[in-house]
Length: 376
Image (cartoon, rainbow, N blue to C red; front, side):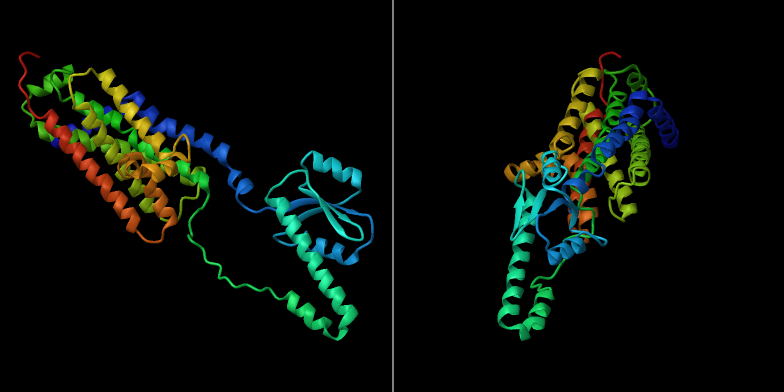
């Protein structure tokens, strides 16, 4: 009887159009929009790119010209330099095609249209160049025999720090939206969990009324339905994860099996939460559906699906919310897998979600246990 209930509950799950839309189609559509919106945005805003500058030569300075050419070539050039006249340079600066204009006169000077990191880098470069030029000139005039040793000393890269990577994972800040997207898809399993509770309370649906007078053990029936809903949810979430990883090629780290496991844990929490919400009170199906969707969307909002910085704000002023918010915990699973080398933080988040799932399941069972009705 258990497998009979499991089979037909699984079939019924895939017959629900709203279930397939919210859990399968909607995350894929939204994920595609995220990819289009955020693709290359990280590189443009966070990764260093060559700085476009214009060089206006009013006087000949062969040494400076060679330095600029050297810094504008190679695999990772510092500058994208253009040698031009003053009028053309000012036009490019006005239209933001370049970050600054370097004038080569008896002394070097810089013109910019605004303050920023790129402008600061250009100025720092000019200051360093002029300091080194002054040192070399002074050495040639006063101590020419020391010229080679001065040049060798200036050519050495002095580094007092060791370059250590904090993480081998993807540091793209926009990837958190994909974490939260999967969390939302997993949480939408509450829709199916809701139907299970409603279809096992005789005073809420005709199907439940027939179940109440059937000889099937209620615990067996509910358990089979929950497992079937979890299986359907897991299939849909796995399809969404596969689409994000292998079609959109979003870098979520190399722990692929653990990513799918995280989706499974999130799906279990979503289904049991919906079961828990649906088991309370005598509210009709539409009202309970509205409550379930409201809880889901609020949880996803607080985890950063709509506003990426909201989770940081909550962590600063009310961190307990991030510790119990299921959507935040689900998205944290993917974050921990991508960023951290160990599983300490991941285990804490995973165990918390499993505990919440057990609480939701037990609470739902207690509310939908066999009852007596005056009439059905």
